[in-house]
Image (tube, rainbow, N blue to C red):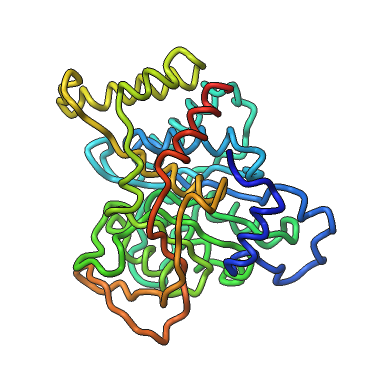
Amino acid sequence: MGYDAPSRRTFLAASGLALAAASGPEPSASAADRPPRAVLDTDTYNEIDDQFAVAYAMLSPEAMKLEAIYAAPFHNRRSSGPEDGMEKSYQEIQRVLETLGRGDFREVYRGSRSWMAGAGRPVDSPAARDLIQKATQGPAEPLYVLTVGAPTNISSAILMEPKIKERITVVWLGGQPYECDSAREFNLQQDIHASRVLYDSGVRLVNIPTKNISEQLRTTTAELEKFIKGKSRIGDYLYEIFVEYAREHNRDLSQPWSKVIWDISAVAWLVNPGWIETKMVPSPILKDGFVWGHNPERHGVRVATHVDRDGIFGDLFAKLVRA
């Protein structure tokens, strides 16, 4: 079970992450009783973990008011380039929503069609513009930006309208722990210029690294078969793409094998911050060659140090059964 709304907000406020409005009317007294606003930025077709994250966010109305989903670019063997990856992600978001019975959710936006070409060079997109609109013209309440791919859409929005930094908190799955010799990781390295914006801009950032942190979120075909297969349409869909992914990668399912479902970590942090231990540290410097630099005078960011794997999957599976 996740935190109830008051205790979650108390935790976020104590963490220094509950945002005051930069402008506009004061939040209403009832705002503290409502789930926080959120958007989800996802390279959904990149592999199979984003689909779990989309479903998890949609099935967690007690923890967040999900206002939009953005399709993020990616480039690997599942796409011919960032634009193709973004478009395939957009279509996959629609499939997940239809499977959830939420084809009526219309706040889905295409994102960047290319990477940032250099520092300070944003990529305009419907996703970036929607984020700017929701951050600057929406209710005077915090907006959490759950980011589980290359952060091109989000960093572009920050560069296009810097004042949104005062209205958002970015929860980003990306990079490696700051003590590692290399920062290199798929989301971070896809667009190094966009990744630097998150570390350099001063935007409120919760960073969930991969090595030894989000990679703890592993599951297996046997576990999915027991807990979600045959329980709901979305449970069957997630089970089927999990098995298909294993076959694509020539995994022998008669032998032990597990797969990381990385992207549920960002959603889980907002559902229950207690499941993901964090600490405040100076923001690292992302250098050329994907190595970390450090300066104790830099502004602070919150970085994850541990995840409660069983708590997160227990909540996710229960919601998939009830879907």
